[in-house]
Image 1 (tube, helix red, strand yellow):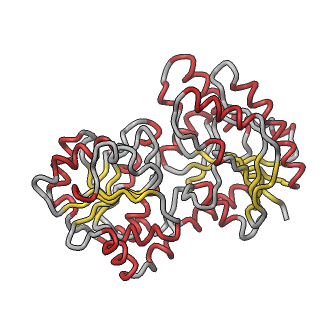
Image 2 (image 1 turned 90 degrees about the vertical axis):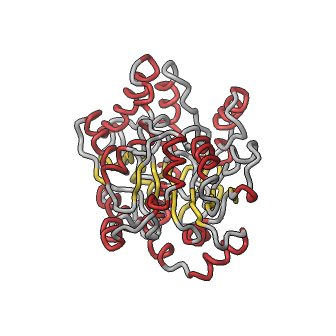
Image 3 (image 1 turned 60 degrees about the vertical axis):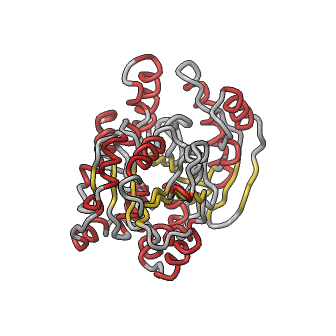
Length: 389
């Protein structure tokens, strides 16, 4: 049986709800997976120059070791992180040798590649393993012009061209891959653990509401990684402060890493209706979603958010919840009946949050038909087929 070397974003802790972990765990039921995991090194306390320098040193000067064995074997090895347009290609050459060594060590015939700034595989005729590139976001249109943008886009373009097969997590990213390379990328959208989400009992959801004192409130939920500069938390809380004056029954439930990043310093907590509970175990997420009456996705419109299929939206929609979102390109393209859009500014969001019609009735049968294919098992089937497994 051919094993797979999994080179994603180097984040692979088993308690993370991210695309590469969800897919790898399911593929590993049939094919051994060896996943590069540098979660500890890349999880920095702040984004300062000193913290980032320390992270780079930890990544480059560490030993190769197996972290955990199992269906997915997690391992660490020294890697050179991208260091800008002057050193991208040199760092990739160093990482190529590390990847080749890991392929040999673990007996892998395939490499799953989802990191656009780390690894530049040799051309197919110069290697003995197949490479599948998974396009999960569009960072490089952030810098449409200038040396940084041109260099990074060229690097990503070359990495995709050298892959044997491509997939992308949204229609917009399929278009993006074709625009950069002229190649077809299979549509493999972010999914949901549908069985776990739909089997969640009302008792579990009620237990969450009771524990947080949310009985009798209209609860709006925001679940994800809140450490990102583009997560929209500032705008959401500005809108919240204006909306709660006319709709005091509203409560905001924020779940995930960094959930109190903005609310805490502003002194917003349960007395104001804002509940930040931090990260929870993946198996507990369904109860938190079902504890909400609606969801929000305030990500700021920019290339990295416009082209994505957010887990937050897929999971709330799978549970049949209405959602208020910024008018992001991929979400407008999906046009699910539960999605409501407000312009990306606090005033528009405050008006939408205060208006009960925002989270009013919609065609739930049409929604379930639309989201039925957004299941991780279907996404895994697409990627397995593309990889020739």
